[in-house]
Length: 439
Image (tube, rainbow, N blue to C red; front, side, top):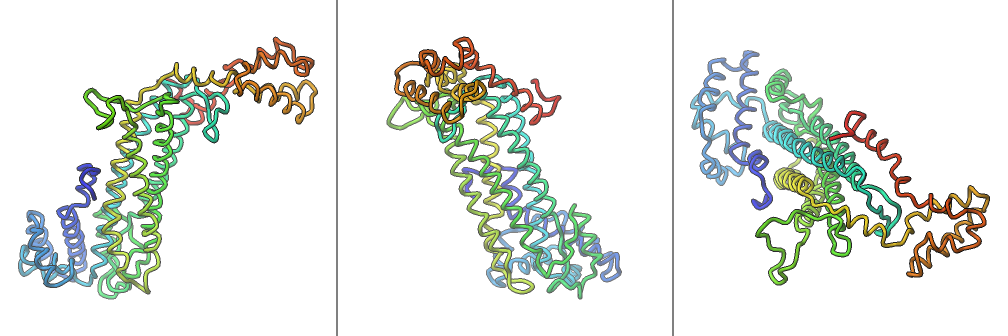
């Protein structure tokens, strides 16, 4: 977890202070559950809460104990006993370390998902606002990086909005899947702790009970969670890549906001580089890099091993912190994105009408010319326009083979940009709903 890319709220979820506080709550709630069943004295459970609730856990002391015992949960429990006193002997009754570790990780991942969902909401709001703003800002659509047919910048942004709507639904599902509690004891059989204790802890922490935990919560749940983060990261990279391409000097249809006093290069004072979206691209690569280890964690030995443990100590904080930062950065980029409609129009017109070639092709087939012949007629004129010999409309009007099928005024109609925009409202209604077509 690199401080440069860590925002405070997400980083706090993974701090030692937060972890030990969650550990305490798991242990204390479990002790409460045991007390309700008469396994431990209610007075002892109350004393655990009384002493532990007010305590500031001494991280250095816990680390000191761990250096001796070589076990993090035992180190915490030893320190807790120093705080609570004799009643601490009733803590952790019938439990195993994974009960604490896995349930804590569920809480942390659940909270992290909540922050990420807020981030996505902010990005969605920015995308919707800018999409509506540029609903009819005509620009060139590109396939293979080459001019294809006209679209609008609003349609481009609406596409990203729809993608992040899907991301939101996936993350909600992933949060639901990971929000489980396991307090089942050694090898998950509940031999030394009643399942009702698990249900009590789960309810208090806002989790569901894991149906069968085999001592650890099955790691397919975690794999699905981190895979979801990886897909969201890929969507962020697609958005970032679009902006980076649009900011190229030769294109310059949109660019990141460049603040007063900002410097683009240590050597070249004129530079305005897409550093924010380049950063998002790099961060997305990192988040995706955490998916494979999460998938490999699924196959543990028998009822448990700890080959997953070291992995999760990395990827839990790093993946969520990094994605949080990248989502927030993307929202800021969209909110302040500088858009150049005139440059979009200029670029669209650079190919001298070639963007209308399909309409001419289809019109010729409707006029009775076979498709292959129609394609040949349009392409031979399109290639001349491509080579700078004139604009496509003029070349077509001068081609007797074309004008035998289509009169000049018919050709004029085929070069109307509005034709390409006639279903923009339909697309927006599909993406934003009938009530979301205006700012």
